[in-house]
Structures are given as structure tokens and as C-alpha cells.
Length: 122
Image 1: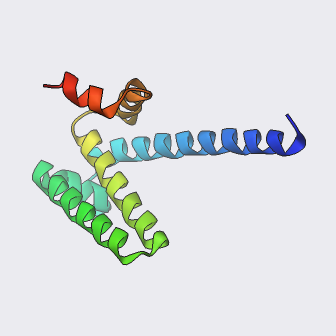
Image 2: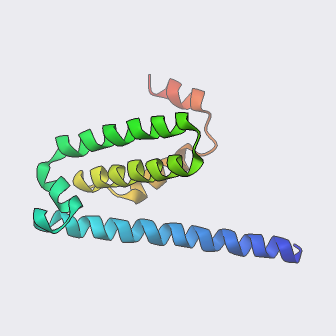
């Protein structure tokens, strides 16, 4: 592997580590917010309002993703997808599920045809 290939590999590993760290820190923060008083943070307030409020927020964010995708502004789309992912993490925490469980499911599906996967569910 040439020098450029080594740099790309190091950058890829650094990005994977950063992504893992971000997800871990978010998970820890969300768990802490579950026990916090609602007035202390947006997420604590959302948890206190319950599942319906969390689900409503996810629907709202999904709609904003669709609108951002249609307007053609890539930075706006990234921003809205981040909001959707964040609120999906809130829902996972509310349900006692972890990011690791979602990543395991994605890993299980990797390399599996979507057509085959869907047929197995019937």
C-alpha cells in the first residue's frame, strides 16, 4: 500500500473511532437525561412527555428530511438527517434499546439481498 493508501486507511479508522465515540457519548447522555428533571434539558423534557411525544418528534423530523431532500441543499439535508437520527436515538433509549442493537441488525443484513430479506419476513 502506498503512502496515500496508508493515509486513507488511517483516516478511515480515525473516522470509525470518532463515530463510535460520538454514539457512545450520545447514549450515555441520553441515559443520564432519562433520570434528569424535565426542566434541566430538552431531552429530559421529551422523556417526561412520554412515547407519543417522542414519536411525534420523529415524524416531524422525518418530514423535514423529506423537505430538505427536495430542496437540493445537501448541508440542510445532513442537518435534518442528524436531527432524525438523534430523535431515533431518544426513542431507542426510551425503549431500553441501544445503538449496538441497531448496528448488530445492520451487520446481520450486510450482504443480504433486500429482496430476500423482505421475502423471509412474509
